[in-house]
Image (cartoon, rainbow, N blue to C red; front, side, top):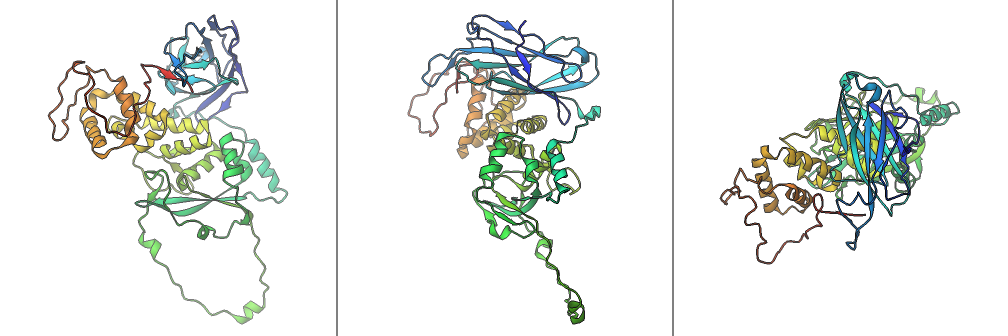
Length: 477
């Protein structure tokens, strides 16, 4: 057997498990199927393997380019082998997989659950597409996460960046050299009240290409060295109206507390001329650094990001939870807000953690609202996750779906279109039944597939029908 999965580096300890990264050696011979050998032992006893089908056997679904010409591709299937931990009572473990220069098939979940102990010797954890025209090496990073209830404590060595930063303080260098401002409150059509956070630049770099580019260019292009202890907030926009995610739950409501409006006045004592003349006033030392104003993400989100980059620890808010955590505790943030930020900065592991938290919070009570939300419309990965959950519980969601569809039609909500299309394409027509009638219309009875021809008349909608996906065909690119 060929060694298709070549380990790129040693295993990396994550918050609750182990991450292994591999380069995939795609065989040049395209006419035969290839089954790869097992990888070396990963974590504390498991292995992985993969197989690559020939182009001839990788014809379904059909992949088309922008000119609707067939694109040759190969199917890569990824396997987990529990080996030494088959009998371990670890319970419910989770895989999350990140890939580069590969494309997941529609039916490939972002995560996969697995129960231990098990009698299985292997399990499929992902199916991917490798186009013939793809360039660059294909890489796969697999994180195996264990339940927090096990109390597994994974000791991490001190990060090299932290060692360097601490060593520099011996020679008098500052541990803080950058100050961020981010908005903390939201009003009807604006965000407000920027709050400061401090950090060490060298501890923020090297986590991802996206974050490095932001720090090197976008974040500091116009920034100059200033006194970090001075109040720079007067130079920022107190009210910012172009925030692109007004439903950000990491922003608190901009309602003034009485304490904010009460200024305590204390009696001023007369200066003692003898005391002032008897001592020399020395200038206080200044900490010099750069100041950056964050306009696309909330204070709570950025604060949690800085804490994660320092410690690799992240704590997400429960649905509906509001208010800041205690200053001494791990800062909390919304998994939606962190997913958005991690996606922007290309922090794949943090993005996976946020996605896992979002998935754990889905219920039949909130899935319809979440699936048709503005946040979900921003990310295809979130759409696929929530559509999968929605379709799996569709029989329980009749009244909620009817109410939501009525609202979508009444309010003209174009951001809901992608999810609505995916649900419609994958819902069997003999299953559709509106259990709660739309206001003013009689209830729709179960009708099977009869009478599904196109209606006559000219469409007045502004949206165009997208190319079919899922059960129909895929587009490359």
